[in-house]
Image (cartoon, rainbow, N blue to C red; front, side, top):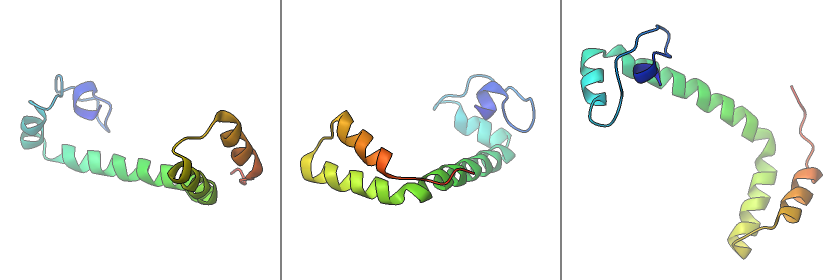
Length: 88
């Protein structure tokens, strides 16, 4: 996304990024790895902020899945509707 499409902090398109070319990109642009790490850290924190208030629900669903292997839609809806999460 950053190297192959120019969607980083600079509008820099480096060509198609694929497993064969990414190591060359990183050698030519060492700051690319730092930018990717920064972006991943920001996105990771956003995801964790969404999940933290729902950890009880996630654990309940995980327990049901471990015990039974599947859940039907009605079970998921019942669990989700029973949990109230404060919105920002």
